[in-house]
Image (cartoon, rainbow, N blue to C red; front, side):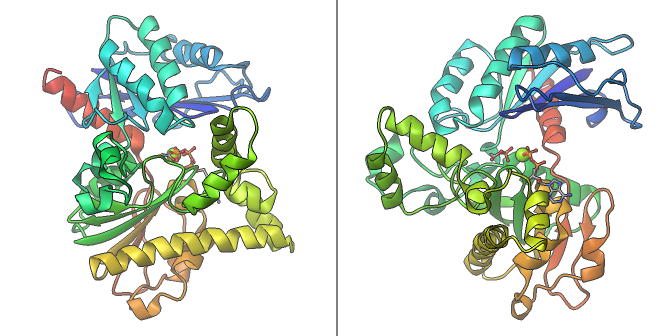
Length: 398
Ligand SMILES: Nc1ncnc2c1ncn2[C@@H]1O[C@H](COP(=O)(O)OP(=O)(O)O)[C@@H](O)[C@H]1O
Ligand SMILES: CC(=O)OP(=O)(O)O
Ligand SMILES: [Mg+2]
């Protein structure tokens, strides 16, 4: 059986084809269409051995999602490719009703449409992708896997906001995101024969950034809330703000005030606002290294916000046995890791500077020998988790 997994972002579509059924899902092919609508769309497609299957042309024309989907469909239906038996999608926010990963039908699509208000940066592209793919692959089952499901284990004290309870009944609560990433880290630790740490903090620092506290491998609290705009500072999102500041912004706008503030908070805030540079941690670091003061300040603010989240969760859990970094920044930016954990030696947290700079596959340990807390770097395998959940749903006859 072959499961196609699709993780669509606002300007990119990542896809992987997994073999599953008789064994745990294994990725056979993966690809990405990125920079959709930018005029500089690129396409990568390779097999499990890294062999390039993109036909040698990395530049493709995809001015919108529908054209990008044509590229994806062309690749997975190409010569020699196996039949797709099921399709799984990463959907960031399911809205208030859906609490588990689900097989998609028209009712589910209705729920997802209603969830767009909670994740306007993420859900629309996923919904568009699902609609297109359902019409192109009408005979196979389609499944939605949500970022939020992993956080269902949070206690009510972590979920509820201090606003009138009638809103809680309407689904206004902390949901938490990057759950598929967190789950994949717990799973990878098991595969690497690392004893599951009792108290763990996962810092998923990528396009979106969040910090999650886990006890016994289950989420007990996380920084993102009702939406993926809150929590720690991100590339284009501000993280937590004084609610009075949001009211101030709303009062300043003309026309469609909510739409203007939404655009400001999801696209124009965070590191891009502070640094005045494009949304790429590498560029910000390079500029700061050359003396750009705004870039340096943006890094300081980013580090400070993640450090406060990590420290807060250590206090909440009464200590920490492991800290894990994942996501594009968490996995690749050694400086972010040392700066976030710098000065925590008194808490028993110290990074080994040599191990921190090494590059290798899978979960790797970067803590110093004297560190009481184990510190790891791990890839966020969201796509693998989606394949695992789709496989389970198929086995369960869903
Ligand atoms: N080698 C690297 N060093 C520092 N930052 C990196 C590196 N590679 C990727 N990043 C950063 O990771 C972020 C994207 O993270 P990623 O997890 O890939 O996002 P997405 O959620 O879109 O998959 C960007 O800010 C990018 O600059
Ligand atoms: C939930 C979220 O922020 O996702 P991403 O990091 O992919 O933007
Ligand atoms: Mg991501």
